[in-house]
Image 1 (cartoon, one colour):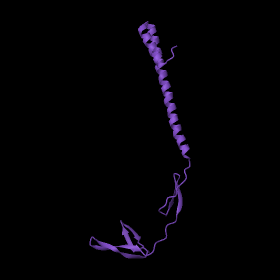
Image 2 (tube, helix red, strand yellow):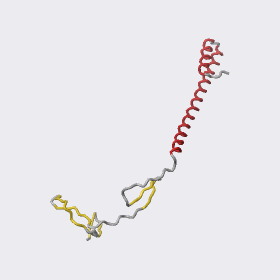
Image 3 (cartoon, helix red, strand yellow):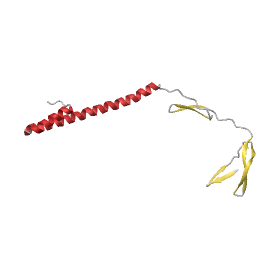
Image 4 (tube, helix red, strand yellow):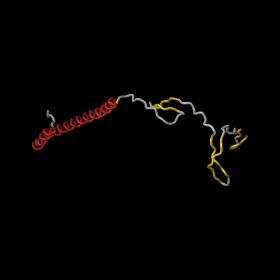
Length: 138
């Protein structure tokens, strides 16, 4: 049967499946219709074993999903998260030490300036602060 859609002509080949009209139907826009059922079940499509991001799956066969073994044991996963947390802790510790060094350098500079001015009260306060911060004075 020759058909045309938006100026494109093509040959329509009718379905070659053997169908029967079902009992369910009705009227739509003045036309009667019925469901059509296949008389025989067609052959299922071929199956293919495929993988996507390490997860195996099959095409053509719905249903049971085959489980895939985990590549890394759970202890390794825990070790990896421990490694990430441990590296974060090391970075935090290093930042903390650097911050404390900067505070001690600032305190040392302020102490030198106070000694140069001869302000003994400020020198005593800064030395006391240095003891509380556990900063080694030079």
